[in-house]
Amino acid sequence: MIDRQLLPTLTAALADYPAVALLGARQVGKTTLARQIGDARQAVYLDIERPSDRQKLTDAEAYLSLHSQRLVILDEVQHMPELFPVLRSLIDEGRRSGQSTGQATNRFLLLGSATGELLRQSGESLAWRVAYLELPPLQTPELPEDQQNTLWLRGGFPNSLLASSDSKSMDWRQNLISTYLERELPSYGSRLPAQTLRRLWTMLAHLQGGLLDVSQLAKGLMIDAKTVHRYLDMLGDLMLLRKIPPWHSNLGKRLIKSPKLYVRDSGLLHALLGLNTHDALLAHPVVGNSWEGFVIETLLNAAPRDAQFGFYRSSNGAEIDLLIDAPALGLMAIEVKKSPSAKPRRGFYSASEDLQPAHKFLVHSGADDEPYPVGEGVMAISLRGLAQRLTRSPIPPQNAPT
Image (cartoon, rainbow, N blue to C red; front, side, top):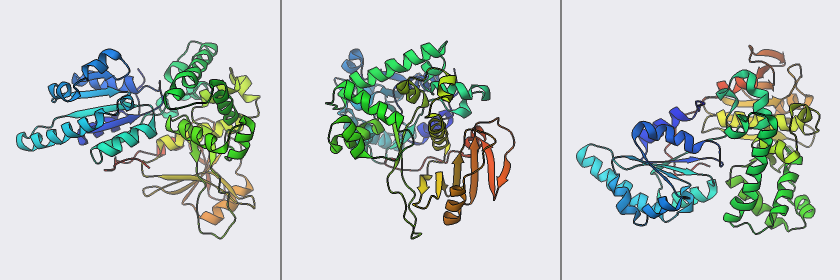
C-alpha cells in the first residue's frame, strides 16, 4: 500500500461536508483510497457499474435511508444521474435531524472518472453540499527518490508503475488506452471510430507541450474543427489531457494566446509513442517536452487549491514554462530543464523582467539536494524539492472547482 498524499485532505473533507466527490481518471486508485477510508468506518460500498449494486438502488431513497448513520461510497456515480436529487434530499433531511439530535448523518463519498459530467450533475443538485477533490496518478513526492525515472517512464497509474517489467507495464497501458478508445469514450457520446480517436490521441502525444492548433489537427484527421474541440474537451473531462492557458497581463506586449496541450500521464504519453524503455525515451525527440509535462503535472497537483497557473510567451521570444500564483506563495516563475547543469534561457530572464515574479526556479531532474543559485535570482531545485514546497491549502466552501 502506497500512502496517498490526498488521504488527510480527503479525511478532513468528509468531516466537514456531507458529500465529497473524489475525481480521477480510471485506475488511478480512487477505489483503493476510498476503501481504505471505508474499511475503518464500516462504510457501505456500491459500484454503480455492477448490476447487483444498481439493483439495490431501485428505491435509492429507501436503501440509503437504511444506512443514514454510515458513510456510503458510490463508485462511478456519474452513470446514475438520477441519484443526485435523492442525495440532496437525504443530506438536507440529515442536517435537520442532526440539528435536533446533535449527531451528524448522511455522509457520502462519490467517486467519478468523468469530471465534466460529474460536476454538471452534482452542481445542479448538490450545490454548497459537496466538496470536490481530484486524485491524480501517483506523484513524485509519494514515492522514494530512486523511483523518479521509473515513474516518469511508466507513469503514475499504480498497475503500470508497479508492473514486474517495462514490457508488462507497456502492455497494461496499451490495454488501458484500448479500453478508453473502445468503451469509455463511446459511453460518453463518441461517434468517431476507435482508429480515428487513436490517431488523434497519438497526434497529441507527438505535439506534447505544443500550442493548440485545432485547424491542423482537423486537417490531419480529415474531420471538422468543431469535432476536434469536442474530443479535446472530452479527453480533458476524463482527466487525460491538460490545457495550460496563456498568462494574461496588461503589459502592452504581443503575447501568444493559444493554450499548450499535454497528455497528463507520462506513461500514457510514452505508450502512445511506443517508448518502452528509458533508453528509448532519452533517444526520442519528445524527451524534453515529456519531462516538461511530467514536471508541470507534478507541480500543479502539488500546488495550493486556490492557485492560478499558466505559461508566458511573447512574440519577441520572452518565455516562462510555468507560472503559479497563489496568495500564500506569490507569483512563481518556473523554468523546466532535464539536466541538473542547465541554465535558464535568455527568454526566461526577459519574461521575468516583464512579470516581476516573487520567486524564480529552475526545476531539474537531479537529486533532492539543497537548492542553489544559477544566476539573477534564479534558484535551481529538484522536482521533489519544489513539489514539497507547494503545500495544499484548506478546502474552500465552493460549489465546483474552476
